[in-house]
Length: 219
Image (cartoon, rainbow, N blue to C red; front, side):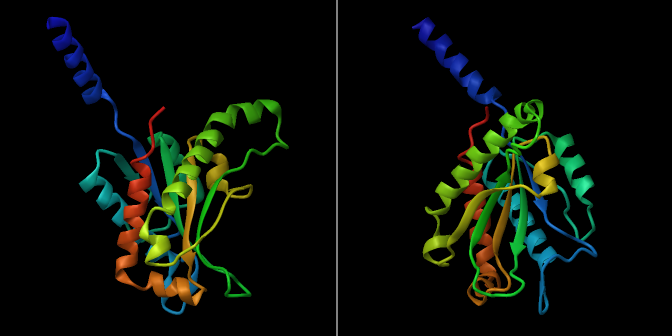
């Protein structure tokens, strides 16, 4: 009986002492950097609104520790974002954006980008980034799987357009921690824009992101 009590106490201690997941939410653009602009809609406002909603849900409905690269409409350079992420040492960072297509308006949907392997680099560089890139891919696959279990695909009819590595994103390339860039929807597509303009859409996207974060197991 005494052994059982000790074992249960130790198990409880391990649960209580387990550290929370640490997340950085990066609201893309800001200040003079408006991002995509369609009529009166500016990407910088959408990314900030969604980032704030995600952070609010995280703090209210989880024990995840969250930080934000910006909480107001201000310019934050790419180097400042990278420095902040590296200082916070998150288990994952999420960079929030909304998409656009310059010529055609047919592209629509949600997109997930993770860091590329950069196989053209030296073996030493590839090895140094292997764990970060591998975990980013793993988390991206988790976000993809979780996506199809949300009402973003049923109620909003928002397809997952792609899930892929991206070679030319400075934030993903130079940050030292696992991360994903999420392109929520296309402002230039009428169907996506009707979703974006609905006040309930931000709530549903934020809930989806929180539900995916809750699936991440700290290594």
